[in-house]
Length: 249
Image 1 (cartoon, rainbow, N blue to C red):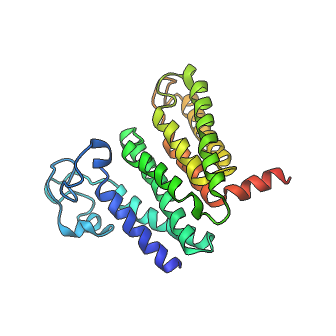
Image 2 (image 1 turned 90 degrees about the horizontal axis):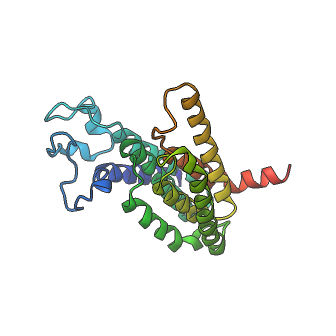
């Protein structure tokens, strides 16, 4: 199962890398498959294969010499790693592929938040619908638990948004709210509590370090997407185990 899951993850990550720019530009899906963001020229066919074009061009566009984004390696190979972990953790192939897919979506949202300070609707809304549609497929969580996780996530997101208001408009955005809802719909109850807690705590620690070191001020943008994504993946893979461990102490 691992030997099949990893190549599927590699292919999915590469596909998401190729369409990355149009996720937030509103660009037509019929646009050329892969272009340099600087000179907007089509890249050679080698760039359609995971990592190959990036490596043979030494990380630079063949047309204009501009440095290419590292997500050309991070997305395909990171996705392959996530699918491999999912295959190792889940006994059934279907749930393993489902877990790998949603883990890759959280990786994608991490990169969009770091790159463009956006949690794209083109990713979040379809992912929420897919999570609802496949809520029955998880082996250890019922559809009710998944949908309840989404409802609880809405309440958590509203509370976090209200608590962040004193820190400025950039402290917590609607993109982060939608991402919390997605986490709830993917991992369900009680894992959504684990995921949001870990993500919020990790983001708070990082923000505190940056503020205390005076590298950022209270009004600067601090992306929460990567921390929420970290919590989401941990909750997706080990959420119920962490929950049971905590309440069994």
